[in-house]
Image (cartoon, rainbow, N blue to C red; front, top):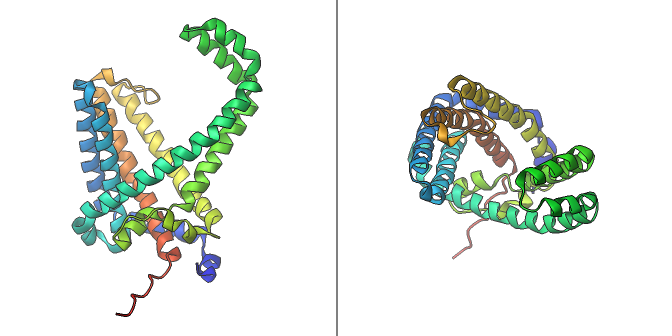
Length: 285
C-alpha cells in the first residue's frame, strides 16, 4: 500500500465526504430505501402467514439488503445514473462478498468462543452450576439464576462484550473495502482487500465510530418512536401484532436503509478511493 496515502488519511475528511455524498444522493437513497423496505415488509408478511417460509424469506432479506447497499455504493462511487444501470450485478457481488465474510467471521468467533466458554464455566459460572442443574428444564428458574449471575459478575460480562465488540470492529474494518472493491473491480473480492487496509485500520475504525455510531443511535431512536406510535414494543416487537407490526417493520427498515446504509456505503466508497491499490498492468502478449 502507498504509505503516503495512509499518512494523509483523515478521519474527519472521510466522514465529511460521506456526509456530502449522502446529502447529494438523498433523493436516490430515499427511493432505494423505500423499495427495499417494501420488499422486506412483504417478505415479513409472507412469513407471518406461512411460517415455513422463514428460511427463504431470510435469504431474500439478505439479498435485498445487499442490493440496497450496492445501489447506494455505486451512487457514491460513480453517481446516481450509474447506480440505476449497474445495481443488479453490483448487488450480486456485494451479497456474495458479504456471505463469504459472514461465514469467515462465524468460524472465527465460534473457535474463539469455545475456550471462552470453558473458562467461563470453570471460573465465574462454576458456583452457579449446581443451581442450574437443579433447575433442569424450568426456564423461569434458569433465567433467575442467570440473571443473578449477570448482576453479580457485571464486570466480567462487560469485559467479554468489549473483547468481542473490539474483535468484530477490527476484523470488519480490515475487510471494509470488500463491497466497493467488488463493485469497482467487477469481481467478488474479500480477503484480497485485507492488505489494503494495513496501516489504516485504526483510522477506519475511528471514522466508523464517528459517523456510524450516531447514525445507528438516531435510526434506533426513530424506530423506537415509530413503534411507540403504532403500539408495538420496539425492543421485542411481536409478529402477532398484525398490521401495526408490519407498519413498524416498514418504517424501521426504511429508516435504517435511508440513514445508516446511505452513510456507511458513502464512507466505504470514500475509503476505497483513497486506499485502493493500482490495478496491475496487463501482461504483454
